Amino acid sequence: MTQHPMQQMMEPMMQKKLTGTERGWWIVSLENRVWLPQGELPSGTASQWSLQGYVAYVIGEWSGETVWLIRHKMEADMSSPRRIAEQDLRLFQLAGRGIQLAEFYRSHHYCGYCGQEMQQSQHEWACLCQHCDEHYYPQIAPCIIVGIRRDDHILLAQHRRHRNGIHTVLAGFVEVGETLEEAVHREVMEESGIKIRNLRYVASQPWPLPNSLMVGFLADYDSGEIEHDPVELISADWYRYDNLPLIPKSDTIARRLIEETVALCRQQ
Image (cartoon, rainbow, N blue to C red; front, side):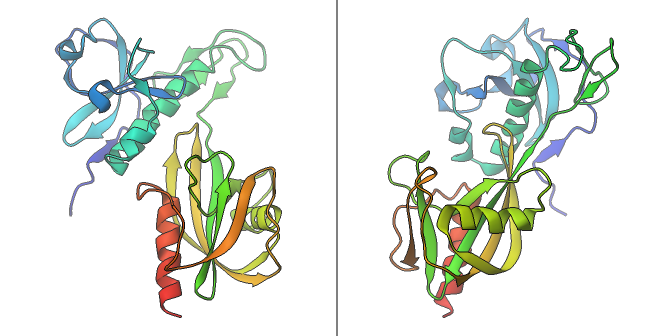
C-alpha cells in the first residue's frame, strides 16, 4: 500500500521552544497568512531559517519529515496559502491545518462564557477555561459546491469575490439546521433561480480561507430560467462544454466538478 505523504498526529505535542537543531517543514502563520520565503514553504533546520527561540508545535508529517507550526507574523513574505495549492494540493491541505489552528488559538484567548483567559490543552487541539470548565475546539464551516449540467451545457457564474473574469460553479455555506442536500437546492435557487435534480456527492476539499470544508456535488437541470442574484453574482449562464470561459485552476474542487460535468456533456 502506498503511504500518503501527509501523516496526521492524533494528539498534539506540547509546546517546544526551538533550539535551532530541529528540522522539517515550517508553517509560520498568523491572521490567515503563511510565511513563504522564496515563494515556497520553508524546509530544513530551524537555525537555517533563524527560527530558534520560537515556540512550535508538531502538527504532522510530510515526505518523511516533521511539519511544525509557529504562530507568528513575519515582517515580510507573508502570503495567501493559495500559493501552496498551486504547488501541491496535499501539502496545501496540511499547511491549511496549521493556518486554521493558528487562527483558532489567536481568536480564543478568552472564554466566550465568562471572559476569563483560557489555556491550551496539552492532549488535544482545544482551548480550556479553568474558571467555568468550558472546552473550545476548532470549528469547520461546511460549504456546498455544485456542478450543474443541462444537456451539453454547464451552468457557470462570475462571482463578485473572484477576479480576472473567472467563471465557476455555484457554492454557498450550509445554514443552521440544514442537510447538505437541502443547502445545495437552496443555494442554487437563491443564486440562479433554477431547480435541480439527480443530486450526487463527488468529493470534499478542506479550504482554509478561513475555515471551510468544501463539499462537492453534481446535479442535473430540472426547471426554471436563470435569474442570477446580483448581490452575489455578476452573471450566470449556460455554456457549451467545448466553449467555456476562463475557469478555476486545477488545484480546486471547482475545477474538478467542471471537468466531470464536461465529461458528462461529451457523452450526450
